[in-house]
Image 1 (cartoon, helix red, strand yellow):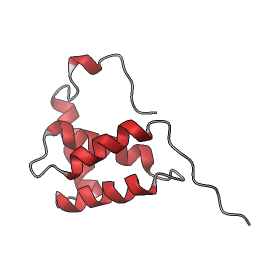
Image 2 (cartoon, rainbow, N blue to C red):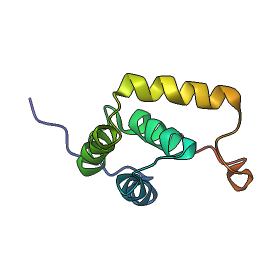
Image 3 (cartoon, one colour):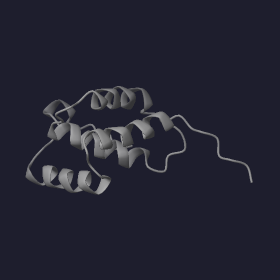
Image 4 (cartoon, rainbow, N blue to C red):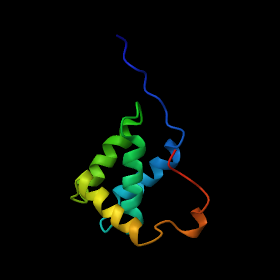
Length: 95
């Protein structure tokens, strides 16, 4: 059976910059945690963007979090209010 060819995610360029910013964070904000969780969900199981997938795992390790810890934290963050600035309203970036 042939291996699936790696795909390029349509949000790759924008996401690469966000991941680079997350890698540089030593004191992540609520927004940083939310971005990390969102990108982990986006790229989980995606065939391609292996550099981003590896770097998301690196960020988790740098912040000393498990994926489950991160998702618990971001659920709490989202429960208390808006994480994303008003300028992002109306733009659903979960694709």
